[in-house]
Image (cartoon, rainbow, N blue to C red; front, side, top):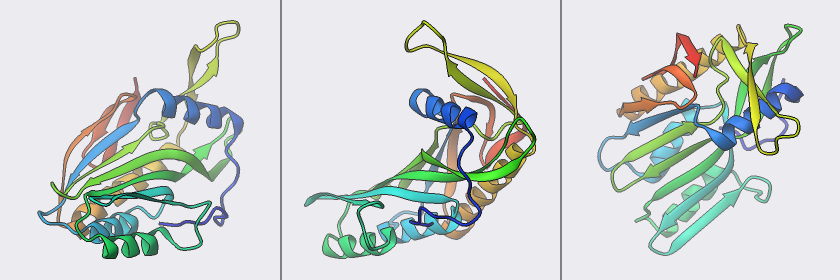
Length: 218
């Protein structure tokens, strides 16, 4: 899991997808997975397992809660890595309650001309660990995982309302689905935990390990 803004091979998000991702992030949930760790999971261990399983998720902010209060790491303000920071604050308050992280996601996209590329979609996911119950949630906001997605644009003269239209997204969707499935399976294998539930407000076809090949936007 990287803290670096300048990631090799990444390009700016095309405008049509930047607006779509922002709309979906503000309004509805693309996918959510509940991850049950083995009992007694240590906070730093849980973080390291997640970071290793999801190398395409880049930390924007990370917070740690304990009886002493809440501490927060911000990528744009810190000179140390999120992992080093978490290790340090947990050592100071070992009986912590858990962590929360806002994530930028490195995802593949295709534009109307058929160009395939990767971009960092800002503030597109969130993960939360309840260390008391050894329970973690991963939420992803935009749907960039189905072969057809919906892109949104403001309705002229109707402030605050948006209209969605279909947008062909294969083969980018297949690449994103494969990446998510690989990460969720890796998390289960490495953690010894179990993905216990999954849901979506944007997609019909969410599954234990991501999204099925025939998933469609709602």
